[in-house]
Amino acid sequence: MKILLVGATGAIGGAVHAALSDRGHDVIAAHRGSREWPVDISDPAQIGDIVRRAGVLDAVACTAGSTPFGPWREMDRDAWMSGINSKLLGQVELVRQAADHVRTGGSFTLITGILAREPIRTGSVASAVNGALEAWVRASAAELWGEQRINAVSPTVLTESLGKYGEAFPGFRSVPAADVGRAFVRSIEGTDTGRIYAV
Ligand SMILES: NC(=O)c1ccc[n+]([C@@H]2O[C@H](COP(=O)([O-])OP(=O)(O)OC[C@H]3O[C@@H](n4cnc5c(N)ncnc54)[C@H](OP(=O)(O)O)[C@@H]3O)[C@@H](O)[C@H]2O)c1
Image (cartoon, rainbow, N blue to C red):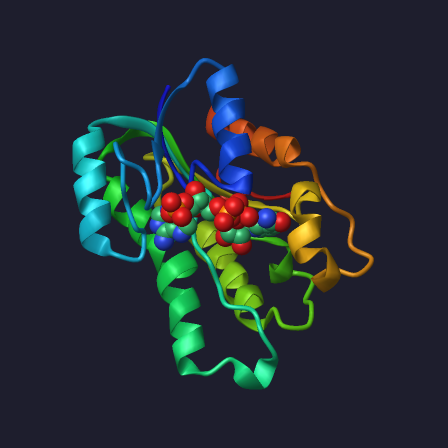
């Protein structure tokens, strides 16, 4: 399959890229710093450019987008808007614009995260953004029925990211990035739609 993967160099994106390449897929590896396939998902014009350049696709996967972390009282409107513009509207806009470029029966797979269902201190914006994305994926599956499939992968903290984020996730189980990669393969090669894969 020809797959546009946005966020392809990240901790999760790298594992997804490896899993899809191992399965023989043709992966267009996009991210802001890419020389060949640059895109910033917080900029709708850049999304339009890359989906037009990519041509007809079998799938779009996204492992990009960030949210601010910090004490609840410090999450002001600017902080909220940065998370909404990047991870939430960035992924929504990617699907909206790519919908005309993904073949019938093709799929979208987005990234959310455990904070949608299990809160931590400092994670209020991430919880809200992940929860909104998961609700939107379920709603979109119904409207895209018969056209394209859409799912989300919602991981706990990565084992590989424990050094960076472990302190914020006391007592949480971690997941190896390779397991997250497999969830993307399942979404892309399988038949599910409207699923949130908690890994
Ligand atoms: N790591 C974890 O433990 C974990 C667990 C659950 C959920 N998540 C979620 O998974 C997502 C990725 O996390 P990660 O840890 O893999 O991040 P990461 O290692 O920082 O990688 C992010 C990737 O996305 C690209 N990127 C970042 N912002 C972008 C943008 N606006 N437009 C296009 N590409 C962009 C980065 O490349 P450039 O900088 O070149 O653009 C990079 O390829 C995040 O939404 C995070 O909340 C992470």
